[in-house]
Every structure is written in structure tokens, then in C-alpha cells.
Amino acid sequence: MLITRPISVTLRVWPLAFVFFTLYGLLSVSNHLRLGTTGFDLGIFEQIVRSYAEFRAPVAELKGPGFVMLGDHFHPILATLAPLYWIFPSPITLLIAQAGLLAVSVVPVTRIAVKLVGRQAGFVIGMAYGLSWGLQTTVDFDFHEVAFAVPLLAFAIERLLREEWTAALCWAAPLILVKEDLPLTVVAIGAYLFLKGQRRLGGWVMASGLVSFLLILKVLIPAMNPAGVYGFAGDLGQDFSWLELPGRLFDHDKKLVLLLSVFAPTALLAVLSPVSLIAVPTLLWRLLSVNQSHWETGFHYNAVLMPIVFLALADVLAKGKLILPAQTYRKMLRVVVSVCVAGSVIGITTLPLSKLTETTTWQADPQVAAAHRLMDMIPDGATVAASNRLAPQLTDRTTVQLFPAIRPRIATDAEWIVVDTHFVNWPRSAAAQAAELARLRETEYRTVAEQDGFILLKRA
Image 1: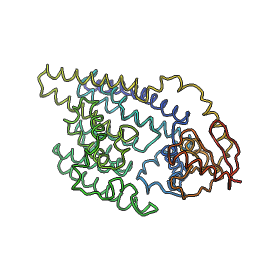
Image 2: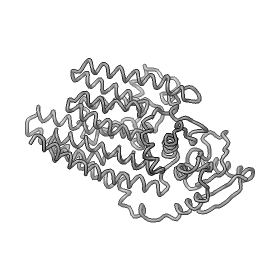
Image 3: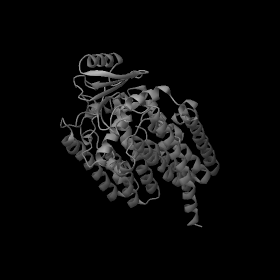
Image 4: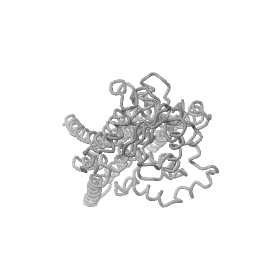
């Protein structure tokens, strides 16, 4: 009996993960097919993976000519996608890989929730996790390296809750290769071990994570950055002082909304678990940042927080079952299940996955067809300067730069320029793009085709 039950739970959990893989994949691929992805970030990440697949340094021309991206963010784990890219050289490969990574994380979250709080409540928690806003907004916004961190954290915390310390560290160790801030999450995992009585092991883990963090930020990234620095250090502000830290954490309403949004899907109970300490490094650097996008509940920044808070919820419920009167515990469990069900309904009806229920998602778009007709005129292997929405449509077969360049003084040397005049709000204003386009048409480039707001130029 002790052997068959975990097996049956696992067999039930994997189909749930496959359902989420299908949903995530449909959402992200349909976004891409409707020109809903961008050069920043899907195009950049495809250029990185394409470089690894061709056994080159991870260069992204969209970031800048010859820019080695390990000098921007530290994410060597992306090299593991190269074999997939050999088989399917397409940006869709990255989107499908991301869908798979996020969906796999449903397995440990649901499995340990079932073990700790029971089959029905455990599956409700797993469903709520899979439909959580942090995962949906990640799927909805291109591809990002943090997708690797989500299953690693989920499996690591599952093992921590089972008190399988060595297995937990095996899952947590690769976080150092995902992104430069995640060694601090490893430090937090070491702190959790220390609190659980594994003081020597926890001390070593904290030290290893801190040394890795300093080595990456102070040595490895600057060594590969053209300016010899870590380019995102400015996110803390020019005159940052640790004395102002308490005031900086909650000096804007968006920061309070962020904190509430992270823990609200768990009825705020996750804050009672020491597992939530693992979320502190990610929340801390975001709340201290002067970049307001880091305070948002959109984008991909919240993906790593989701497995932490939902596993913290399972931990709190398991402890409550032991210390609370049976009637009180049942009431608490009903509240939690109700919140999770409500969150799941919201996730299906109002968050990004709801796009899958809209007829426009599956209808042919004449504008998209027009854009592809122009892009099909660009030969394979050409150098192209493309608008942000068009760039990831071309990165698998051409060398793509961004048009217009982020820094106005950078001149393009591309053979072709393809421009989208519909959505012009980044990297420069519509007026700036129009002025640059007019200048190039008068001097170096001739118009090859123009249709439905898309313009194709070729160097004269």
C-alpha cells in the first residue's frame, strides 16, 4: 500500500502537467503566429540559442553588434536547448521548451500537496498553481531563461519538504547557471536548511551561493561585457545607500500591490511557512529596483515566486493539520480550497489563457499575412533591421538587428529593413521611427514593397 499510492498519484499528476503543457504551448505559439512576440526578448534568446547550436559564443545582434549575452545576463543553462534547436531551428522551439519547463513544475507541486493535505485538496492546489497569474503572464510574454528556474525550484522545495536534503541540493544547484540573481535564492535555500537544523550543510550552501553570486557579478559578467561592468547595477539607482533600504521597499503603491498579488492566491497563508523565505531574494531586488517594470505583476518576473508560495501553502496546511483542532483545520482548508478555486476560475476567464477561447485567436489575420508576404521577400542569410514585433519572425534564418536602434547614433548596416508602423512605442517613438525611415529612403535605401502598414526597404 505504501508503494502503490505514490505511484498512482504520480500517474495522475503527469496527465495534469501535459494538459498545462498543451495550454501554455497553444498560448505562446498562437501569440507568435499573430506577431505577438518581440525581438526583445524572444528574438534575443533565439539568437543566443542559435549561437550555441552553431558552436559559437552566445551573441545577439539585436542587443548590439557582436554583443556576447553572457556579459548582459548570466544564463549558460540556455546551451542545453541547442540539441532541440538542431532538430527544430525555430523560435517556436524556445516557446515549446518554455511551456514544457513550466508544465513539468506542476508535478512536484501537486505531488507534495497531495501527500501533505490529501488527494482532493492537493489536486486543487496543483490546478490553482498551474493557472496562477505568475505562470500565465510568463507564458504570455515571449521566452525567458527563468523558465528553467521554475521546475528546479519546485523539485528542490518538494525534496526540502520531504527532508531529502541531498536531493534538494541537487535540484537547486543548477539555479546558479540560470540567472545572476538566483545564487541568492540558493543562499535562501541554505538559510532554510539552517533553520531546519541542518546547520553545517546550510552554512556551506549559503557560502557557496554567496561566492557564486559575487563571482558572477564581479568577475564573469564584467569580463564578457563590452564596457567591463554589470550593466544592470544601475537598477538600484545612482546614489543607493543601504541606510535607505527600509524606505525604498514600500515607497510606491505598486510594490504593495505586488506583494499582495504574490501571496493572495494562497489566502496569505504562505507567509506563515519558512518556505517563503526562499522568495525573499527575488522580492528584495525587485522592490529595491528603480526600474518600475520590476514592480509590475505582468511580464516574467513572477514565475520563480509561484512554486515557492504554493509549496509554502502546502507546508502551512500540513502543519495546521497537526496543531489545530480538527474543526478549525477543516474550516481553514475550505477557505483555502475556495480561494484556489476562485483563482483558477479567474485564471481561465480573465488571464492570458482566456485568449484561447476567443475566436480572433484562431482566425486568419490579413495584416499578419501581409507582414509575412514582405518578410518572405528577404533571402535566407541576409542581414535585416526589423521592428520589434517582426524581429523574432526572422531570427531563425537571417541576422537581425533592431529598427530603429535603441541608441539613435547607431547606424544600421543591414541589407534589408522591414518596418511595422502599427505598434510603434518602443524602442523609440513613432515620430522618431518615421523620421529615421524617411532619411534612409532618401539616402541609402529604396522601397521594395509596402502593404497594410508594413514597409520593406533594400540597400540601394
